[in-house]
Length: 243
Image (tube, rainbow, N blue to C red; front, top):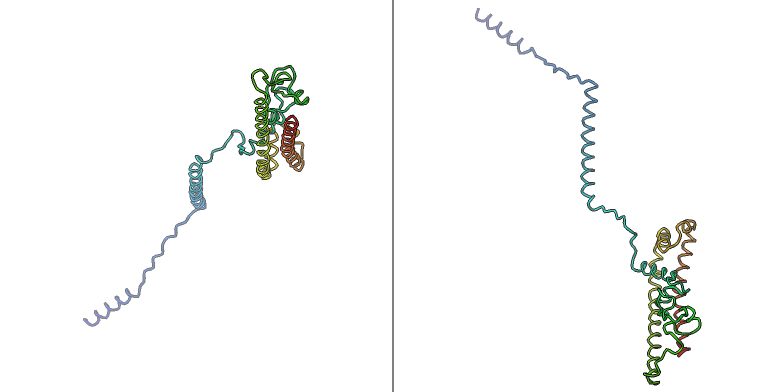
């Protein structure tokens, strides 16, 4: 009996050892709606991150992005040329002498047609070879000034006048190349705007081609300095003749 019982117990144990239990995990089923929602959430998350970075970057850079809405900035050379062009084209007192010639060459007032108030305009006196700064034919004081002293004073006046005119001519010659070089780097659009700023009609400027604008601009600059130099030279010649 003992041997039989032992054999039976051993058989049962072997059968239990041979049995294997397999547990199959349940598969989680995901619907299409859930998949679409998951993709949508991820997409919104990425989009929020991108927009956040862009928004922060924009607001960090905004204080440094200043938009200037005032008049166009011009350099000192451009301003100097604009002033010269306006003076060459302006005749405030209407005596047919430009403001530039009156201020820089003849020494007369650009606001008074007859600077010395002798009844003859400055332009007529200059054309006649008389002094537009002196009323009457005799500008000397013979009663109180000796002849020799008067001659010395006149010579000194002529020397100073010639010196001033020479300085004007030298300044023009020294600045001409510098100004021309500065304006040579300007674009056609800047040339158009500069012409408009100097008093040219906008419609006339817009009607010109780029090549015509360049030619006109170069012509204005060349004529400006050539006319100024020529006027100064004529004034020097007249002073030498009268001396």
